[in-house]
Length: 158
Image (cartoon, rainbow, N blue to C red; front, side, top):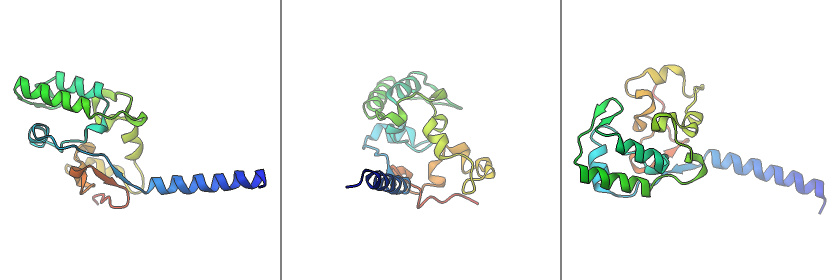
């Protein structure tokens, strides 16, 4: 086969694959673990542990009771159990390998790239209380609690 044709076919295939992946269903599993969901769902979505590296989860849990703008009171044994579980289920892929500033999912490089201001996500959206600077995933991602984040089904508030 012609090497030039092979290169063109490879480029076409790569572009097609990239477009397919960009529109694909993104699923970040949330393994069942009752202590985590019971404690964290009180104030926010129990985020999929794969959204942060183990080091960030460890530091977030060690810093408690202060937790961003709240005081979280969890008994020491439960806190350690949740911390160990989060670290065991943390993201290990290249996308989340780097600890984001303040160990915030919404400050991670991958998150800010996906959620950057655009026609679909104008600046005014981030000022809405329901969006809460991106921390309330379910505002736009109806199935976020199941770990499903799909570009095709996202509902950005007007």
